[in-house]
Image (tube, rainbow, N blue to C red; front, side):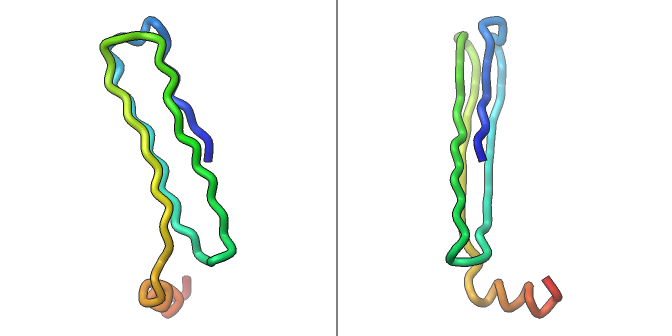
Length: 68
């Protein structure tokens, strides 16, 4: 995942956020997440974040028992 919030000089007062969440399903899975913000003005509120996690064995068993 690669995403950018780009606030132009005319974007004063902007309120923006970017969020990326990924769940990997195996130990071989690889995730690259690069959230970024490019700001060209003042008086704004921006935020970004990224979270990557896995299921534990109990969660995987539950999903698999339901056909996932």
